[in-house]
Image (spheres, one colour):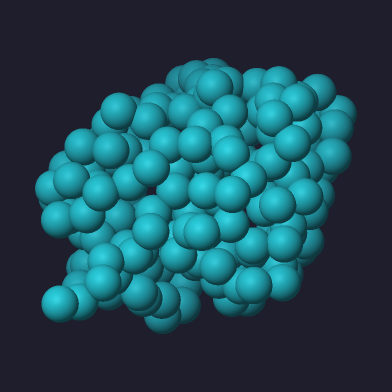
Length: 207
C-alpha cells in the first residue's frame, strides 16, 4: 500500500480552511489542521492559508510559536509548502501593510496596489487569468491563461525574477504565484477556483 503524505494546514486563525479541506478531500487526500509543533514536524506537505491583515498574520504565527518550526521544516528540511493569498504574502521579507517584516523566505516585498485608472477598484476582487513564466510541477497539466479567483489589496513584488511563477494583469502586471525550490505561493485562491484550482492543489499534494 502506498503511504499517503501527511498534509498539515497551519492553524493560526486567519485561513479559509474549510474550502481548502474540501479540495484536498476531492483530490483523494486527508489533512490535519494544527499549530502544534510535533504535528507540523511530521508534515510531508504544508499549506499556509491566509485572509486578512499582514501584521496580524505575523503576530498570530508568533503567538502560536509557529515561526521557528516553519523555518526548520521549510528552510532546512526542505518540506514543500504552499502559501495561499495572505499566506503567500507572508513568505516575503516585508509588507507595506503594517510596515512589518515577514518570514523572509523570498527576496520580495508585499505592496499595495497603486492604480492610476479609477475604474480599477481596490481590492482586486473576482476572476483573472494567470500567465505562466516558467515550468513548474504546481502547474502540471494546466493550460496557460486559465482564470482563478482573487481577493486582495496588496500584491508581491519579487526582486528575483526566477522566483516568479505566474503574473496577472490588473491595471498593471503583478506577481500572481511564486516558486523558489520547495516554496510555492499563489495570490489567488485555488480552493475557490473550480477545476484548475483543484488541479493546482492536487499537483502540490502529489509532488
